[in-house]
Image (cartoon, rainbow, N blue to C red; front, side, top):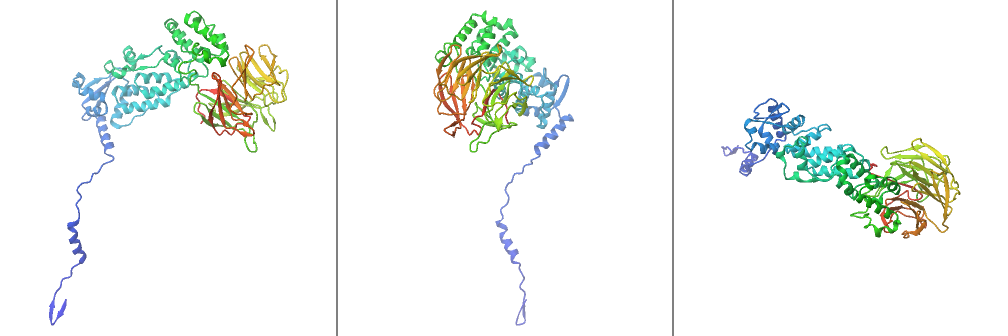
Length: 613
């Protein structure tokens, strides 16, 4: 209110913020569209639909199994199962009648699958997984079928592997089939006398033939045989001839064939020659070939098998380094000469670099994977121990720790622990060790000529005839046939435990080696200028020189391959894994690994598939 010469003029008050808001009204953009999703809607929908099923509301179809009726909604079944979708699109009388009777189908499996269709939840157990796998395959509910396959992978063991393999083959579950088949290949040494293996048919059999022979057993109607039903599955012949078969020795493959033939001799004898043709008979152990195989009447009476035996004996009579040229003639080589033998080398004790501390640590080298693993430590530190494998266990015996030791330990892979066994009667290190007729022999050693053997059953050591002389630099020992061969002070000796006496053989004054192994009837003295001795012919030969002049290394043999680990060369620690092929007379560097226990460590080989973690 302002006053001008007695004239009053009224000016209204206006809030500027209101005026600005009014100007901006036209500038606000309206929300055209925004989508909202109820994250719980699916669960709520299924929950209410399931309650309708339980309360039998709006149900328009029935499943009858073993006299029990399940009221369901056709729409739910059609969405979840292509099997029912195809049924409802057909002119089947069951659709018109509103009920289908499922014959030869498991009641519990159908009940669980109906609940899954309405809830999305399935509970698998060892008791129900197989019937659920068959029934989900019938209903073509692939997600449940896949979960059943994964569950069965976790259930596989020595008893179930063949059953799971056959189920996977029957239902065309390729991933499960491959998993079970690989498990069988990798664990064949534990399975070759399994009764389910003995029940396998000779050759490949189509799934269609299998189902039509017994459709009830496989819970599959004949009308469901689709194109994939014509795939073939591996059986006994394919298993025996597979180069990936993991075995300790070819002996076990032979035993498998004979056991399989004799399981139903009248019907299976006609397959003997075919199966024997897949066995590497020249690779059987010499004693087993002479004492067991040659004495088998089934082979002697079969002309083809008899010729196989002649070839095997002829091949074994050839020195091992000369067999390569004859391998095709005597059927050693096919795709691969040796099968996929999984074996592990235990490296035990020894000394380290630097200040040379003694070790109780142990490593396991997985040759097939080129992988170095740690296992629990031994109870004692041991330098220059002798290691040996017997019946799947590893023994570490004697060694040096401030003074020579008489103690011994045993490692059981499945228990994953070192335990003491009975001590030797005399302490020793740098001595020979070998296993013969389920006994462990400790031969000589530093400043001792005594010999003793260990019986694992009685957990006791027993004295044996002393070696004629002792060698202050140490003794080596290996087994060939029924005899123990030992080298001491430039002289070879042989002990036949059945005769309890040592025999002096020839002297080799110029022989220098750090490792001694045997293959069939041949001794291999491993060093830079290695030599081998064919004991049957008493003939020496030379090996190709090692790539480096090492000493104190660890050496083992598996099949026709020699493996050398570490050692020293002019005070330089070597971290090589060297491989020597007997057939090719050739050395090669197999791997480079940082082995800490590589000087004067014990070494032993066990075959098979083990979990060292």
